Length: 340
Image (cartoon, rainbow, N blue to C red; front, side, top):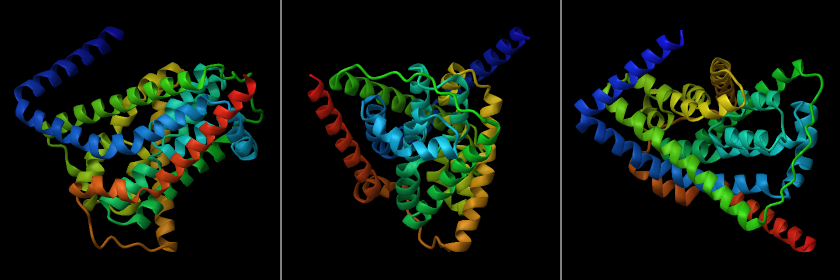
């Protein structure tokens, strides 16, 4: 059985390589488009947040965050308080922030295997920067639409976490590991981890963009394979509820980026896939209901050339998060000074 699986994988990889070589011009153009998109959308929106969130998860002041959200994390979601930072920063920061923070908690033994699996079932969200700013303000030219999309996907993720928690009657509390590294070391580790994650995302976007430029994928299916390119290039053919569902599903490109994390915690991809589909369906319904309450029309559309300027000039939410993160870092430095 394994030999047959390896043989199929070999054929697929060789076929892909042959296509990339035979249609090198189209592949090159697609790869360049993907690289440009990653440079103008993904890297500016995600890299700063990843560095700050990774640093906060390593800092001693993460206890403040855990205590602040403990009632919600423990009583509502039935998760240990150590998972609070991964939930909050994952839903706000965007994919793959939640998965990366979950892996970090699991690696440090702050959460057990079952808790890590539970987190990955819902904590894969587009985040405020990508959904509100990049998708809503820059692409749709409608910040209200971006807020509705973000509210739909985030609320749906929390509903999944809430309703799936009833089967867990008792919360497990692994002994938390405390940070003993210096602030400088923590900053270096956080930066290195964030850069690796963003490079990984960029590589997948470039690869999927090169392949999709060769294989003429029908427009409605492009976001299912690569969400960033699909949303930016073909947003006009989708309604807002459909966009909410696609953003919740996240696309196979994001799924592939998380495969190593899924494997490390012992989760089956089929389990992960089913919850992504459930999140997509629920987000579609949630967005439909929100539009009944807050009607929104997309009368004027933006284009790709406006994305960079819009992201830099309008990202108020990101600025607030960065300021909050800097404040927590300062508190962490002061805490360490008092201990010396």
